[in-house]
Image (cartoon, rainbow over all chains, first blue to last red):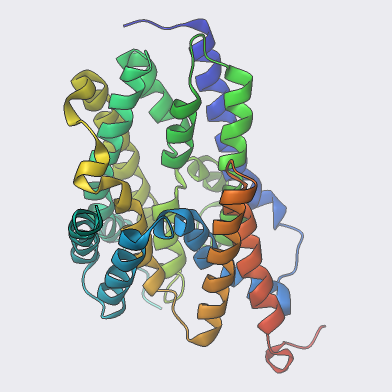
Length: 100
Length: 235
């Protein structure tokens, strides 16, 4: 069990930076009246961010793209989350084997 | 409206987050393993998981890790990877009316992609409670930190994550969550814009900006497509 000073500084810095991003949204919106186009934009942010996070992964190759379509189909027909997850993992394994 | 008890709200959150925790298990194990491979002690790795509690940022950080730790560079990079939290928090803040004001800032520490997504989905139907929020977040951070410890101790035992398809697990989970946001062709336009901009930004700019740019592109398209007739007259 060791603690290096540079590592401790990194942990503190990374922790503070992350908490700053998490908490600042609270204060950002306090004085703003949300309606109209701005509300539409804010409502769209959650799915847009989720999509942005995974965009590089799902466009990485044919195996990933096809696995995405299969996973999305499982999600759209409202299978339970864990089933959708396992469908995604199974299809990426099979497809990578097929394309590999 | 009948107010659900805190306990049942907490249990509901816990039940919702279980599949996420199952998926996070190998991811946290893997991160702990990688951290150990970069020379972090088990104590250092678990402290980082407890203090940062952000999967994407931690994977990027460990990728960039060298000895001694370039702490300022790591801090700035992690900030950029996590800038999406500002937008997420701004969105979530609109739904925290039922949560005591003194609790709002402290519990934001627990906001991660997955539990935030569940909160956003829940507020489509009912108010957000602190019980539900903690039911999602507390099990997540508990599993995240404890699996980091196990992973760091296990070292390289897990091997290549791609061999198990684990690198696709986060994408599959987000796809499942995205299905809950579907509201027709406008959603398709928002998601298409976000995906196109994010994928392009990932290739051209690099780093972690693609998340912010993709999110803003999707929000921009939603603003453009917004029909004026739905607008509430200004007072």
